[in-house]
Image (cartoon, rainbow, N blue to C red; front, side, top):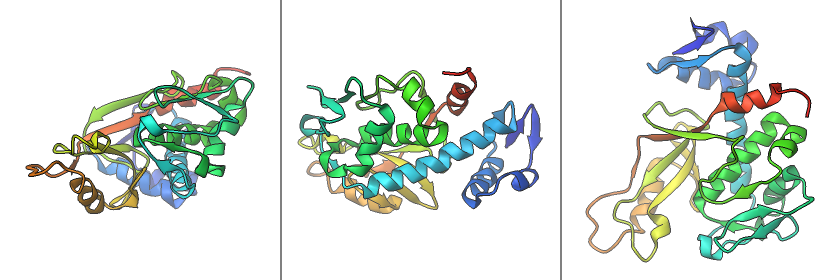
Length: 250
């Protein structure tokens, strides 16, 4: 269900104001769920739709970038833009534009390797850049740090248990019986594309059964439980990010 200014809105009422078919599809899915997607204005809703489609774009581009999968221990990055820290995280260098650094991961993918949770952060930062533009991105994310699930305060991400999955959501496959010698395969964080398509760094863009089969191949001897898709959604707080564009001139 969609509410704008406390009024329930049907997707058909908005189609003439939204041109992209991808976004219309997301609208239909929002309206079909019992959960309420609530907005103060149409602009807020349109921003979320744009951000979600930009997330799919960023995930597709990262998948094609040539960036490799590895554990935090062996992570590496382009030293032109980033400091590689001892914990495997990447810290933006001084006097480097955040927008240039984050886009370099797409342009120079062979110079990067990281774990799947860091890949999710990269996708969401690139989505933010595409959604708010380089000027605001450079102003708000000037201390960019890429590491696991750590996000800048201007890119808040929250979690909830539910199955109202929408394209652009971050979802999670759990592997309860993972091989202790390969603990990085205890889970796979993915971007949901809709229609049983998911992007996970290290596995590519695949359907659920393929990802589960892959994770099941990374289990301990004599496993009992299969990997599975969790009822857990991680989402940016789109309205907080939208507010960055309305806080005055930077």
